[in-house]
Image (cartoon, rainbow, N blue to C red; front, side, top):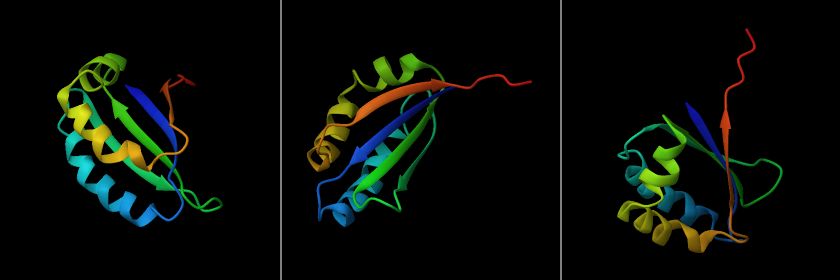
Length: 98
């Protein structure tokens, strides 16, 4: 499993609209091949800051399957105008501590 972590900064005053739009956009990502789960967290200390966590079966399910799909273009059209600056996407893999 791969964890995609994205720190998002939403333009001031657009937070409520963003959350409503993100709820709609969630149906896009949740139908993708390799999608496992996602959650959006709102920062307590900094207004407009969010953390998006998405679990994928493989890195390619995100970077190829989703990012190169027509569905990604719809996702991008719905959400990307809210962000300033553009988000940084990082991928993580669990460390076996046993």
